[in-house]
Image 1 (tube, rainbow, N blue to C red):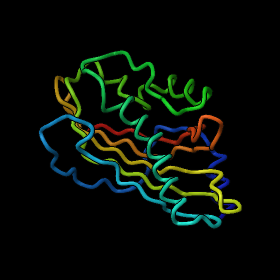
Image 2: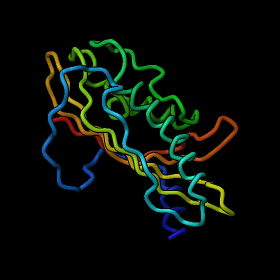
Image 3: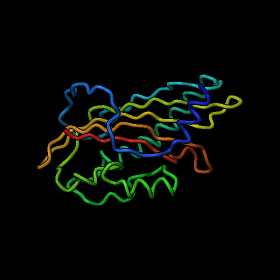
Image 4: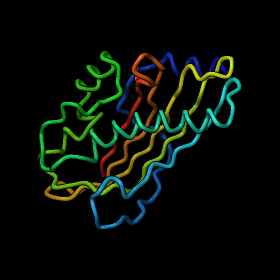
Length: 185
């Protein structure tokens, strides 16, 4: 199992294909567009190695802060319509941020930002697959699902899903790679 987590952490690529899973019907959301109304459901998924329960909870909080920062900056926050998505990748390493900027239509709402009036979050889910050595987390694959609806000239139900690969450095947990899909219907 540790080998699978390491392989997943090392993959660090990106794609814009489908995740292959069945798409469930969208749930009804509230009328407000405030991102804080839909809280991220976050938990530890797979664990390779040993990690005390208290440290697991701390890890979830630390990684969730990074992932939520990206979700909010790239998709949910800000005044729409907008075309400026600079700064949409807080918590990403410099190389991962540069790649995400090139993949801006996928890794943010750059593709639809000018034609929408707002977003209504519907689902935020995060599962962490953790590699732990000597009871210390050394690598995390964050499996992310985000669903939101847009309002304005472009009305769509959008699903962003995939994996963010994180490692801990001097600035804390940072995204160094990703494999994400974005589907708008």
